[in-house]
Image (tube, rainbow, N blue to C red; front, side):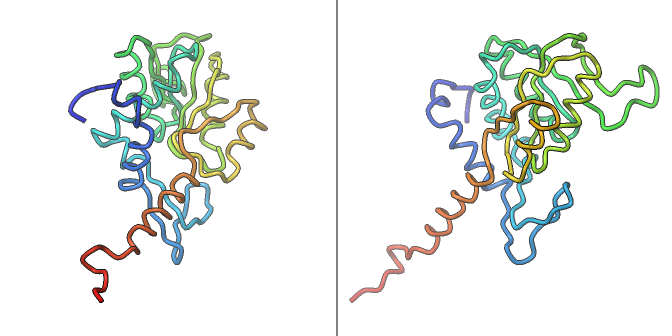
Length: 213
């Protein structure tokens, strides 16, 4: 994209992001599989950072999260480092550029060893309303940890939003442990459906390859 043309983006931004993520982030290996952070093994691996850390992907992710959050009464976005960090930066920047001022917060996995020795890095004050975000959720462990940490620090969790839900129990676990409902931009099924279409497309003979009788 040459510029932030949101009128054009409104028409196809989500599909465009899915296609970019399919190319940059999606891997499928039914034979060997991939070991996930949760300890599970899967034939699908989605490395969201490959998309979020690219120039085009960062802009689209930021706009997609802004679109989801523009009417939600929150003061900031963030989650457990490192997965949530680039999404939070992109979402806050694009939201602020479009008239919805959002701050970012970072939830450390361990408290600082010096200074304030806190888990949370932010300019937001206790009592602020937050959206917890994550890149890819499997069982929801990272998201649950982030929710608990910000609540312990006196913040309110208004919304929980992931870029990709692998549909392996995260939504159920998050609601059971925290009472929060998970919403996701994409699911693993979205990628598998696109993968099926692309695979079938590749199998079709090209015009130049069709037999001539």
